[in-house]
Image (cartoon, rainbow, N blue to C red):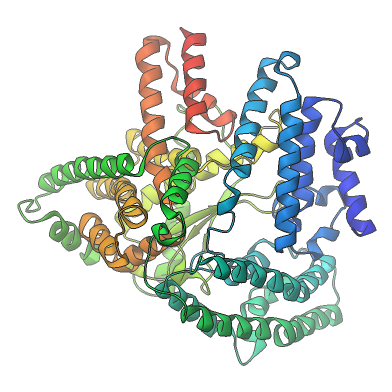
Length: 603
């Protein structure tokens, strides 16, 4: 470990831990349970320079050297992480409940849940795809460098160049990960590798100035106020050289490897094809839903929800004068084909989409005070998904704000296919990704200073995505779905998540092919075919993840009804939302316990 990094670590620990002896906190069992919890998240953060760059926790203290480094992706580092997790779990359980107060016991329960899950099933540690059309290193690294790495002064520009050179080491570590999975038969389907090839090929440009690593930061560097023209020219020249000498050869090697791997692949889509694949998928469902629901139970729930939501949509279509006697698929596809729903397929049209998303955020943010006592301090902005990755990216996603205020929360909108952004679906997506969805939940969680740090950054998919889908319903209930078209869009969004329950379990438990899953989603949602294909291929490479949304939403709606029915006139929706949001993300089973305690305390 470098002296600079060591000093950075000591400084952040000193800031976070106050008077606690630094060495005791970081390297031994801390004096107190609260100190231990701080130690766990501090050490995890210090182990990931890229996480620290994203959160920007150290920069206010003048600690910046980590911004020149990249995460260690090596197999050896995996062993270090597992050993650290085991040690943390053993220390956590050595604190006796009798010596903890109620809040500390709750914190212990939450941390134990997460650590234990990380330690279970080591046989599945490499049962995933590090290289996909959705989240592979070839997408993640450019997105991090051009979107997350900060360039606000000359030092940060120098760090950018250093990270470009460090890409060689990180790529070699990434290749270790790929080859490990190849050895045990965890190989993506052929059609996924073909998508990866399609992404890799255009990334390398004859002129390095056209490469995303140059074009994505050129304006930032030229706008630096603390750099001379000579320094700016030097930095840009060094970026060009790094692209030619480091980045382009890496992309060439990766293209060659993908071609070799493709020859060993097939088109089997589901996790069932892995050794012990059925049991592995069961663990994924448990992880992403934080329940013990089986694949069959989830599949049947999906079918039931699809039927219910389509029935609601048919009622609105009838009210609008559409012929509802034709098959649902024909009806929704004809509706989706109406030109009135789309912006011009031009640069101006895409700019208008971003402007309208922004206006929708401002509108609902100003109109939900009677539902929420709290709102995030961090603002949220709408930005376009980077063009080099938009073909394989989802229709929208959220990126958390930086803790030092240098970057707001970001709602990324995918504008690749103009038909992927129908006007009738924009409000639901806005409320899901931004306000009161992901931005409200994630930014508020990060801002809860009275929470242990590990709870400020905890993430349980069923809670996080369940809240975002619940937020869409809140938008409807408050009257922000202003037209029948908006309501069709909201129901289609919810229907989309119900269909996910069907297709995810269909692919990974029932051995559906990619084509079967595409046919089912297309015929039951009316989504643009480009979006359907993108979504199905996402579920294929991320088993179980798509199931958390609907299960989380239904759980939150049920718990809200449970509290309202039990408390009657004493029920306060703002207090209920405080309860759900202030404690951060938790497993759904634990959320239910919290709601039961809320009911008892307010009865």
